[in-house]
Image (tube, rainbow, N blue to C red; front, side, top):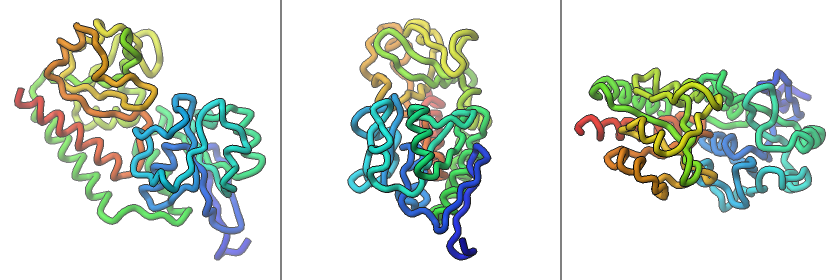
Length: 293
């Protein structure tokens, strides 16, 4: 390899990936692909997880041009030949710790890595959102991408706006993040376990934590118990595997949240500056709305 053509990238498993030239045909997990696109790196294909279906989840795809990016499918139905049909020269995957590739069967992931380099970015709870974003930015730059001019300044402005709005919100205005799990139950997020929710807390947003016990990331409860949290703002999971919040008919919940602001939330967020700034702006808009109530 020559200095001019060589490509190298150390992923979050500590593995050094190398090629004679910079990869140009990238296959990516949908979250990673949508993030790379915000840096100008167009994946040739994307794949989903066991939560996804036969069509890409629009909550996760951001501004990806889905008419030209091939969706390979998702979950256990994916085999190596399907993943490789676009002849990728790099796969970008994510992990929630321990280097395990998320969204693929372990055997399929092993076979894939035997045939094409796989770069894994850790998006787990041990990471800050800033660090996750930095790693995607480093990977994008290695692939020829660059941030859109001015997005760093836009993100900082969004942070400062949310901080100011949160400071002006009267005490008792509560924010709950959840994933609707049908008409009987809701998964209430534990804010410290989610990097993007920790950012909100750091900026002064009063995020409600569910009771101890149960799951690590979520507390699963009935809707009448969720109603007892009395949220003024609800960050509602809008991925395709979540029940649309507007379809929930539980009377106690509907009564408790009839004046609440609903903010769409993707628990698998795009990790680009512009995507993060958009999310912070939505939260700030909601808090400004409840401030006057």
